[in-house]
Image 1 (tube, rainbow, N blue to C red):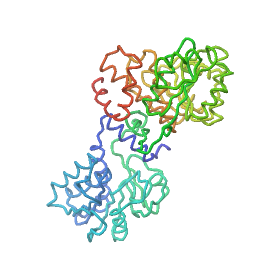
Image 2: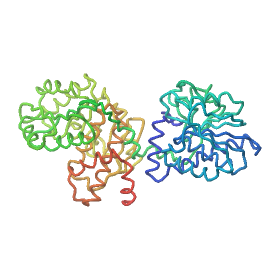
Image 3: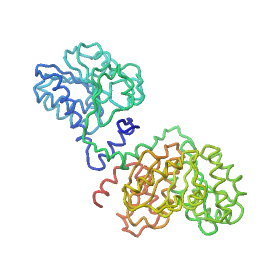
Image 4: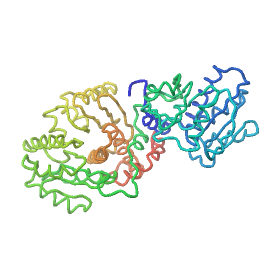
Length: 509
């Protein structure tokens, strides 16, 4: 979004990454709650003011609990109404703030509303709506729905925390019924839907809660959590994507295997490798986990494209380049495979020799795509040497991504990811990953995410973090004596618990 706007998903990514970089959710919640109290005390200075704080069981409710505590400390007459059972609070920071408030229960009116028939009669001058906040995607359910109706019927000033309950903060759509606020206090940046629904938002105030803007450009566990899809019990083969890898030659057989195995470890359902015949038999003898498509001859040729296209039609994404070589016929064939993928609207990852072949045409791509060059390949791609200054590097990557209508993931000490507009820097990884093959693992991770219909910028940011974090865990176990295959088993562990890398990061710093 624009400089002053962030989506609910973007906010979740940012908060998770902030925690990874040392800014806890408890700190953010405390800052959010205090900012609410500042607004209330500035508008209603009389300590005789009655404030009713309606709290949900998630993070929004935690902001409300903090506000209630500080309002009590200032002498306001405070009531807290909990939408549900306090025993069901699972959000750790929210639970801590609830317990802090519970110790003050003899000085504050608190009640739980477990169903819609239990809504008490409430008298207040100010109502604080801290029930659901941003990220709501379905209509409010009972007892929250009844509480929405109760709040809207009260003769009180209504303050919504982050977003009015019942309003989609991204689209501005009312989901069933919504609080009609006089004031909405949102945090860090405005959410796009809040700018569209002024009748429900009322006056909009954006408060800083201690999230430096630079954090929006740093990759972390939030980027991983953002792309990992739930896997329902009724899932079928193919629901989580099929990746085609076009790679390998008479010299290189390992590179496409690493791509395919990394993709499988990243959650893809099927991985195919289209490769020259003898290389295909060599790959089949290495592993039974991938399906080989054996092409005629010892290297990729334009005549092979029709056979590849048959399998490309069944795939949901394609990685082109690992181990292909750069014979003139192979370079020509690469261009035709890219064109075929574009015609079928398949997302593309271009790596290694595929990237070098693409450098000969350097045209804007027509489908979601990611290019994964290291510094030398970036120079081949652009014809210019990368500057040593980080800010100038970021500018070069951003301009190249915009010109080619793609996402560029520049591998290096600090990975730089850009789609020509957004930028992320990734700091996971270590010098041991200069070993050959770790870039193929990265391509497999990114390819798997693209094949699951993940936005290419988000896939590249998450992939860079996962790959680097896997390398960091291997370094912790084995030092710099790593092989690219060592990274594979760490991929699912990091995807399941990306925050686990925080201790590795702290120990390495």
